[in-house]
Image: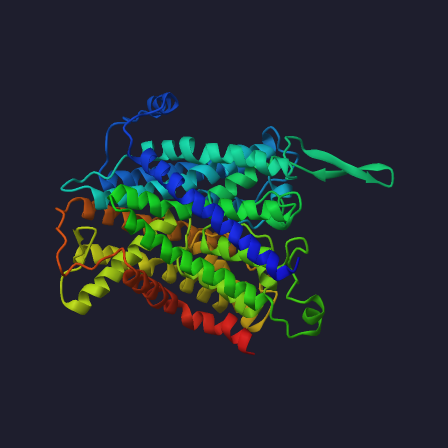
Length: 553
């Protein structure tokens, strides 16, 4: 079988699996977020933390709950990391420095999972399981909870209530993420992904002696990080390591896990607002960008102008032979268009335009389909902007799903859009301006700038992957990237929840002859254009200095 045919078959199988899950999974999430029934385990948790499961919250209270939970998570995880040498199952790993522990605690709580360390040598099993893996679950659940509040803003009228954060968090973790993780952990373990609870597992022989290989709860953690669209990994090579991703089949399963919840949430949106066509329009835009990105990265990685690349038949440097260009490019597009950060190849070794597309994917705000929850609320913000632009063209007050978009709503949407580019560009510009931090680049010129730009783009968009080729385990980088992750995660949530509260207070406006249909191909095209122009062009000067300049050299 040719590599091209294998690539097409992988893509077709993946699209088919996602399409089969779109309706049932999306409908299930909608029922989960709207039902009034609580499970016994959920009621027990509510009593434990003193929460009334039947009480709705105003958006400021919902926001304070998000921030309080995340703050406590950071403090708990920081303390766990700093004290791990004194805890059980530490495996004798050395104590992590304060600035790196801060960066790690922020990273996992912010659903980024950026790692400036190797998981197998810097973390014991207790921290991996009770700290990092738990945050893989709950940080992803926070994103879905916030988008649920935004959807309720569209569906509720004349109220200041947008739901209960603690109920949403509990249900999403127990009813959605945990069951899928258990099932697919078994799938991955059955197909060769390591799963054990010992410091070492023995494999094979080496000159008659046992060869000890560091092991751990890799299969379960692998599913958790992918399902929650988190980065990070037990091994430094991440999903390129054969213990984490041994075959082409496991590679396809991992890509599926990265995408399945985020691609199903538009169905949830359509069901909750009472019009499935709205969900189809949103998922169509997401699908267009994902297909285009995967195709273009694959195309650029098959361009081979050098002697070594011609001999290999493609740009195979930094890629696993067992996965090839197709499996690597499909993974790269999926991981950078979501807030996953897991990688199965070395993005720093991609061709200039292939690596540039990986950066551009994150710069779009990771909305195609994006992170669990964060991708959908990012796309809905852009849908609001698209409706506003259309309203300006015809000279009428814009409305979306029966809610008017006035000055207050557009201010929240504008602040959301401006937040992440501000963080990325200020952070990258500051790093380049400082001689000491500039010295951390292992490459000079345009490629070196791309390494720094990728780092701050990944941090601010809560992606977690890295271009590598840059030394980031320094006090300055750990602090700066940690701040980028904090502000990039929680400032947008402030504007999303404020927008949800503003929409929920409104009285619905009946559709008229002048109302823009937001479920037709025209709107899909308009929204796609807004994504490219409003978001993409914001970063064009920075991209011109990095991957574009390198590619045209």
